[in-house]
Length: 144
Image: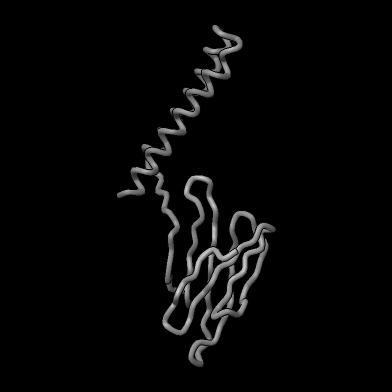
């Protein structure tokens, strides 16, 4: 199954294919130049001859459950294309993670002491709420 096509110039294009067995293939002008098996993404390196010049390509494909599929295409060390999200950690995000863990522990202790059967539900509610806050913070930073 064709994942996407990237036109380098009017005479060259890269095609990315992926199948259900996890085989990733890269074609340069219709000729397969790299193939690996991967379920979470991989790193392809290959050399091609462009107008009598040897050119090195590095293609990185990654998958993340929060951001989806990302790829980066480099030609002789220069980035031609990248849709990799940048996650920058800040003091605020670390405080949010610490607060999330603290609330999870508090919810578990309180639920266990007072509700026996409700402890897991209360802890799960706090945990999912915290994950929602962190994802919202990530999305807001991505827009900047």
